[in-house]
Image (cartoon, rainbow, N blue to C red):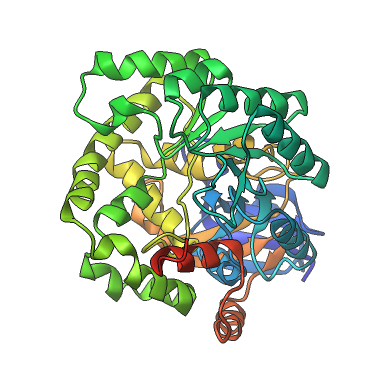
Length: 423
């Protein structure tokens, strides 16, 4: 079906403050052809009726370590684009091509290739070890020559190394994000970093602080136009890794059995209690800082860090949205982070992330209105990727076939080595 109209109870375009009603989206050749009043739809045009639903842009997860087993889950949850922020370079480039050729197997992929780390990378398969600034520059040039979309830097890079990496990537026209460790957020802002992951290096965000203390860092983020990607959900899940309620989440059917087993064997489950409690105590502080940063105008992207423990592919985006709302962010602003803002961050603002004629027909319909009740985002009724209506039963069948074999990819093998002490 190449030409059809989606007729929902209401439409949210990814940018506006509210929904519109009595309008339909006409899809043709994989793109949004028009948005018009339902009463003006051409006679005979096939209609996909979605009563009591809100139609909105397909969502984007901007922090993923991809495994081929995840594709069905992302699509089933209405996530039509992801950014892979650390993986084997050649493998993820191949996956990006596969997903562009066959829209039914998973979301569109924006990728960074390896994450650039110190001499001994923390994640040996996802990471690329570099010993000095010259090696880092050479690795970044190689990644860019191979065709990565953005560049990821990791924890063991100190200020000198991070500055060299940012400058090299920028000289090649590439956006740079980082999970900070040896470099503090204040230093990274001054070095020109584009985006910070996980609130890493943001010491003030992890503890009780006054608005004035928060603002000292937020002023720098705003001055240097640094984007924040909080991934609240991964800190929440790691802090509550022993919470049995996660085991009764029916959405776990969308995670590969190997990943479920990794979650059950994750080392922090049996380790000391103190690190888990520290994370549990930190999450309210992270929410406070997130709200303050958002209120002051810091651009907030949305990512999850799938597939770390209890992060079901695709569906963890719904959980991250709920955590934004719980922090005090309006649902519509949270949804912007998962759609139009993420598209801009990934360099896709003119292609997807909002609904307008000429953009890719990447859409999700959910029962209810997530602008009023953010939890309605989980009531997925229909997903369209590149103009193709995705069959949920086909996704489940594909996942069952994939699940018959253990994934052989960087994230799975790195996690297996981690839980079995083989690093």
